[in-house]
Length: 325
Image (cartoon, rainbow, N blue to C red):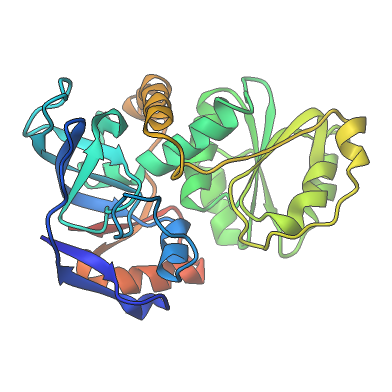
């Protein structure tokens, strides 16, 4: 099969489509003929040599995919050859075929094309496992999403609105904020021209928000603590701004705040299966009702993975970037 190989750690130009061995299919796996895969920030870090795959996983990038099942391991009962599916994977999505544990496979949501379904697994599992399963964001609460126009952000806005949450977002341009508003965000804040803490205080009558989903990390840590209300929860899923922070931690005590962080890729197969099952129960109905839609910015062929990475690194995109196998 062909797969996108990281020929050496470096810039987008190191990604090359090459002929490689087919993946090994274990007894609990399904083999998927890939229709599409989607880019995630983690892929660009892996390309630079900063985020190696977990031991024993595919060395090729790609943390989600959609496609058609080619074969199933002997312990697999739910899925059969020919099923159209999408999946959360630990790597190997940038390829024509990928082997996936059966518990990480999802049916294509009604009303979504096979290729666009590749835009959902990683964002749905990330947002559901953090903000909903862990931070317990619930109807009637307030929620701040940093990077509202990202793949994670565009999904989180729609899911939160579906569940009756008031949504605040930050983004870096008026065009991005308009898209966020169109997806349902109640309040848009341009972080380049406004102080988001002051705006949150103003919009919430000084109370602050209940939950924050943050991918910036260090530089936002203190500001996030200031933006949270009593019993607020901060969930960190990335460090795009850096990992170091200086903060007044007395706010944690004064406001009974909770700070949490997590990734998906390094979780156990059992844990991922639990998250995927919860996503199918809670998120898939929202997609089926048309309340949560795929937001895809651009499609590239696998052979242009480098170009796709260049686009992601400009941060000019809105929503997801897909690669078609």
